[in-house]
Length: 165
Ligand SMILES: [Zn+2]
Image (cartoon, rainbow, N blue to C red; front, side, top):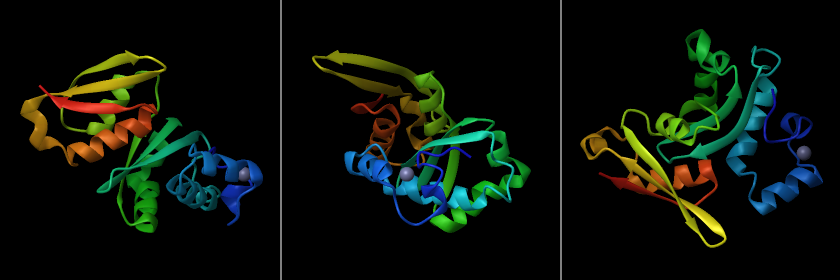
């Protein structure tokens, strides 16, 4: 299974220079590494080679794994793989699909609360996002607004604010 760690590092406890550099730069997190290694060890016994694990997002109360490919194999078979990761990480895990459709990804991340819009705000030299969530669904959010903003920020790699409207 492809992970943000190189294949060699997913099977061992040390990092090669290239992965170490990406960790220092912040494009790879400690959580990405931990989950990549869990998956690296599971790979042989679980049929997950058709999935790519892109990124883990820590929402405090829960961890979101952003994956591409046949994600059904991760959550299928009565969720064995997800529950194995939950057991090892000690937090609830949700798998979402990585797509080019930002609104869909954010909706998957948010869960039961309706995402009404994702607005791009263009600023000099950078891009920011404003995510509008239905104020009627504020109670359906499983996490705090602050954690949600942090999570979407990680997902989109850009500054994000959440607004209830
Ligand atoms: Zn490496």
